[in-house]
Length: 177
Image (cartoon, rainbow, N blue to C red; front, side, top):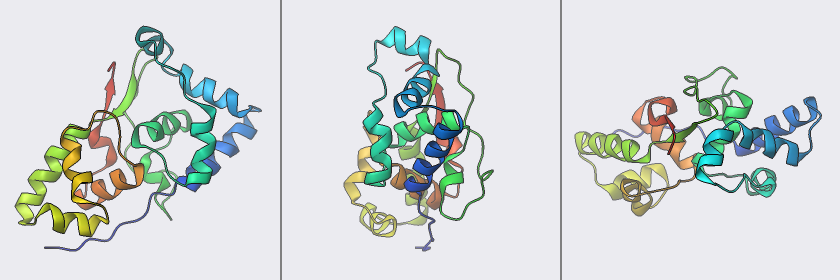
């Protein structure tokens, strides 16, 4: 088994970038939430989804964590890549997110992430337990990707793509749902 090193996803840096843009644009946190949500206004109206909560955004700075799907909403608004929030990374690190219209939104394809992770794990000849130890998570967090419907923690998603030596954008689609 090849041990790889990982750079942590910096949720606080993401929060700080949001705060900077919020102040630059003269917005309240509710204004940020509205703008982020309005990026997919047609899709949201079609689906009848509930809007992104201000607390979801503000708690990012407190919890120091976010789901991979919520992170995409925020990254889209900032026009930044997931890799640009790995500790020590440059602002232009990583591949751009796929462009989405207001009738779409970027979404992690967790099933594809699982399929590639599982295939690579098998090629490496390691068990889910060994891989989980390396990624500092539980085996269930990894095997659960196969049936995950919504999200996983962004920090884990970024560890996985680093372990795979692939850009996050390889696992992000533009979706109407």
